[in-house]
Image 1 (cartoon, helix red, strand yellow):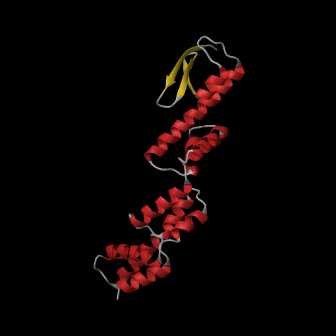
Image 2: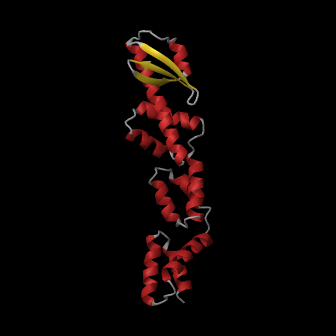
Length: 201
């Protein structure tokens, strides 16, 4: 195996090696450590280091692209990398890199997620909780921010949906439909009972 070309990517801060017609992206540190030059013949150990470093850099770029579209949790990034067949070692190093540069921050993610879903989408606390749990977020961290939502705020969100669902029909039959509707949205039965009682007087 011979190095046919060496290029530099300022955009990604990487060295691009062309080996047997195939491009590999490696860090400047590895490039300097290996003292690589065009027309160098490589032994297996050197080639293995290049392969491993190339995979890590590709994984980092994939993770960064995905995060640039929408913030992700550590669990979500790990799943993306697994789905793209990256090795456990590469995934671990990629997550370490993202945490080191504070690109991944599960607490900030939870704080933002809770605020958006509660204030903009008017989700119930239970719905937010189970949605975050599905992303493998720690329960203690989830509850830290859900506990900041007052019963009054939860009531207001439930009342908003109840009023919308009722459509000015305050019959007993519709009362039961609204009750089930709010339950389906994850509101606690105590909140639902108060809301339905206030709306269907």
